[in-house]
Length: 331
Image 1: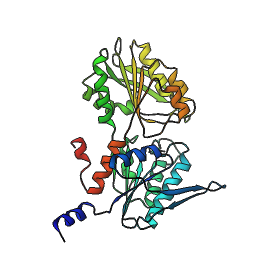
Image 2 (image 1 turned 45 degrees about the horizontal axis):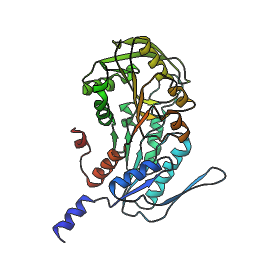
Image 3 (image 1 turned 90 degrees about the horizontal axis):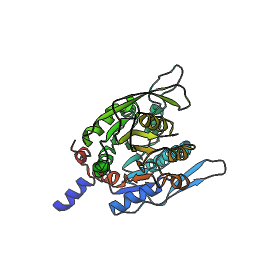
Image 4 (image 1 turned 30 degrees about the vertical axis):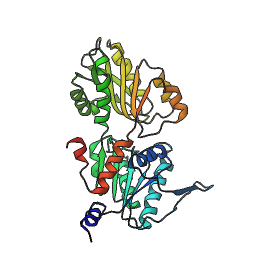
């Protein structure tokens, strides 16, 4: 056997990369495969009249390194079940390794018992992914770092931090005395890192969640935003209630233009309409969750979507070749 063949065998120890596009992440999966100069693998996802799902592969994946890209945004339970069934399908077809690529992990906020008689659903989701057949997982910007501890399988939690900071650095010089504002104290550490990278001051909004209906009340602004452009940062926007409160708070405190930077555009219910009505100059987010056309149409003049596809493709390539992912971020 030649030296070249040995090196190739060592590098591709898990077989060739095979990427499957979940129905919730079709565009993202195709962007990843385009970057890698390969094609998405064909498979059928059949929905029966009783809403049961069947996943069938078009070709064998025996001995291959398989990745199913499926975000778990709305409809959450259908998308989650499709992910789990696809994972088991790949496992039962004797894939060498199966990786669940979940750009947005649902139930991530259910990560602790902060009330009596409630579950820790994020742990349940992690168990389900492992039992379904995943050897590894890849996800983006978890709500809380400790969720990694719910998985018994190895994985990569990728941050869009560098990508978003790089974009804000390109427009920072056009802003007036910019300041980063964390939408709540729970995001304070990440917001501090964001502010340090941009070399701008940091402020915080203190809020208290008052019920289980996702509503929160902004209470106090800690820091100075008067006559400054504000960069509001958060991990996700769901109903838009917290962002609306935050924008109102900084505007009442004398802020000039407001930019909102967040990773996961959940945008449930009438969130798009609510965001469009706010005095925000630009929303900057990613495509971890596809925004439905009707919602994007409402926000398109204010919305900047940055694709995670190149970043995800590099992570998949490094994973397949057995190289460090941390080196991408000099970690």
